[in-house]
Length: 395
Image (cartoon, rainbow, N blue to C red):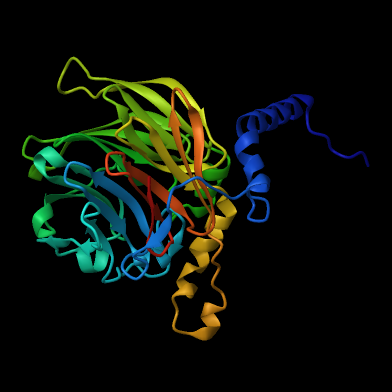
């Protein structure tokens, strides 16, 4: 009996789709081979680097600097080992007592990070899993993305740096804030937020992984407008654009926004145009893109205007760390044997004049997510998703 054959038109379509996939994904997918731990070239161009505060903070995903006051705010969640809605870990949603926001006065010698007291925030002990953070210094407003087991939120606080305390203002929820990851504040009542996926890994794990590795344009950038009294919550939330695995977002300058696509190994630059009407969202138009040899995570811009990009060289290795990191801190010897410690990091900087320059590639400090730098004081900080302490360098 003759074997069945696909119609030629179907074969043509399939070949075209595969060719398109390889064209769009060839570079990023090649890093699955080139950036494997045994092949990854190590490089360290940081001055006086050291791991600090490994006994104080752990699993810090984001860090922001207030260079005027000389302090850093760290978003840390040791319970990320057993609850990570981005990486697909859903074992125990209960927060660790050391989960929270930490303030470090890096401008003062011999100081360590201290946990910020979150006042009037009753949900903290059970449902606080901070990820991206932003701080609007003129209004002392702290924005925190919370991956709560009851659903993602953005928590707003009034922050008092000298008292190392923050008073809860309101909890923001909206259908458009489905998988929030990173924030860029425009004012005390307006911000941009990325959704990293369309498919939530908790509810659609298979499709979420397909979305990641096939680079479906399921991620988004959302513009959120609050009521003048921010305690009243969201006035409007608008979808400005779609892109694969939208991750870090930052102001490159007053008229340009940078957005990281982890799936595409690319940072996209967009002009941001304010609308004629206060009730309309701003408009984003792509200007250019920055290709990278790794998966970018969070973004920041230093005082010299350089874009700092931290991320992950090898996706499967990060997945392995995410699944095993809880064993590294177990009190059971048999479980500690399952610990996998080869977390990988890649930190780079970009400027229009110099292009992309590697600052650090290695495993001494693994799972890098954010890099920030105070140019005036010559201090830089890298945080790691599953790392003990922070990586500090001094120029």
